[in-house]
Image 1 (cartoon, one colour):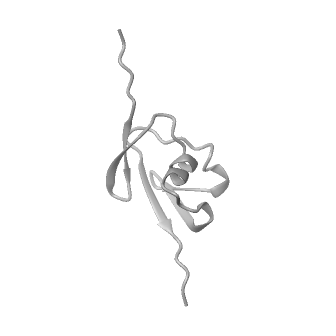
Image 2 (image 1 turned 90 degrees about the vertical axis):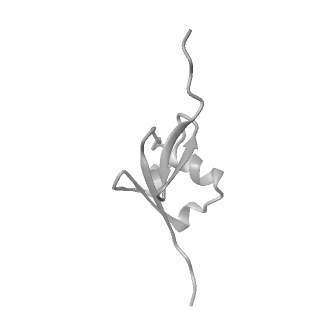
Length: 73
């Protein structure tokens, strides 16, 4: 009998969190209600273009940094 992992650990902005296997950057942003056009995403030291959010998967041990744009004046 094989056991399946229902979550995997990643690091998001310096904190460990659990995500489901197969989660994409887009799905993570949507789940956290983060507006895609207002965030820059770095995955393991590489900037991910916005158009790749839905195709870029997150794997166990990955390091993500989310930088949210804030308006003001």
